[in-house]
Length: 409
Image (tube, rainbow, N blue to C red; front, side, top):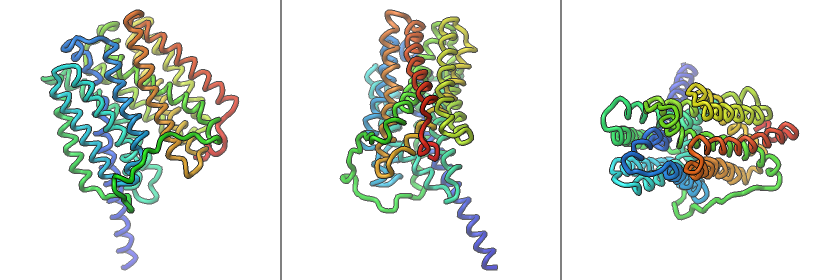
């Protein structure tokens, strides 16, 4: 009887752990959805405030710069003060961002809203990922990793999908998406308050120190091609998120916000699927395979820009998104496996800094070139540059596969 009671008690604890893990994943997804929520709405803002495509890309890039700043200055804050306080702070920034968009009467509100959104994502990415994995039962590390991955990329995909559907089929397109997200953030904060804290030894906020960037000598041979693949993958997602709605409207005359939101969402959902494949394919093969898929996605996007074909845009989102997922998770595993244990967090943060630079700098470049070359010409220049980078990384990885430390990560 005692053995049966113990088994039942263990089962209850496992179910409770998975319930907490899934709730933590839902909070993570809600927070990340807010960072891509404005994507299908930029056309409305352009009509309302009268700014150029360059301004759209700068508004978008402000978010990435904010994420980079948080990663460098406070990426390890939840290790010190606890997961829940940092997640609640991230949700607070997400709520403040939604309020900025609700009150937006001039361009400046959009800049502030995107800045706050970047602060939210920078805090949430590390803290929520760790929290989701720590809430799961002890033998559920692989499944918990999937929950965290799906919540992150799935949440990013749900943002434009939700905003596109509401903007197309509901009233108040510039207000209702943010009001809905504000309500979801409030519910998420209530959930976080009921979830257990997973950091046992917490210290005051004043003890948090900037972790900066780090690149030990033994990591450099792996880091170069891995970071290049991450840079190109995030650049492709950045272009889809920032300028694809404008391309759909101007070149393809597709002004359905639900369609533009769905296409952006497909790229993120495909990235989630690509990340899942890494476990079966292995890191060594996933990195060059991801680079090849990224190159194929770039070629498809070039065809879409050149021939103005919507099916090629969809194919590019699916293939390029899958390549981004493959290459980024493999890059993360390779870099983590090659890093010394006492410097692994700083090296991973450096990889994320490079990845988010990929979201911001090429996107701004596309915006700068849009005026003299047009949106299609600027996109083709971007594709050519990214194709050279990812082809170089793939060729290097085929000649020098990641070392055994990366394969075992």
